[in-house]
View 1 (cartoon, rainbow, N blue to C red):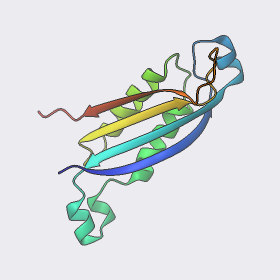
View 2: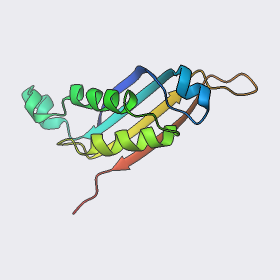
View 3: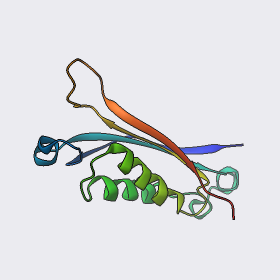
View 4: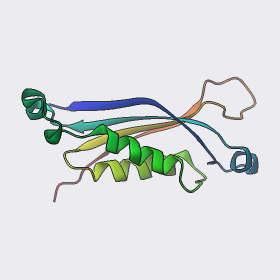
Length: 122
């Protein structure tokens, strides 16, 4: 069984990108995170301390997205995934990072990357 906590459509204005104008002008980024965890015990007991507090996950995403500029959205997604996996009770994570104002020679809704990582068993 895989349960998920989902944070969808988080919006951040940041200065990531390869192009000089991306670094100088900044742009909006959209981030989705799906945290995998066994939620059965917390659901049955209605107890926050038995689940993943997604406020902590949000703060991780915010810190990465508003932190040091990176060239690649792949780097942002990987950093978010690694930090979220370090949270108690998280066994897997899917991270999507999208750039809705991507500069391409034709119309496109966004460019993006999606990665999935699992906690390694000792």
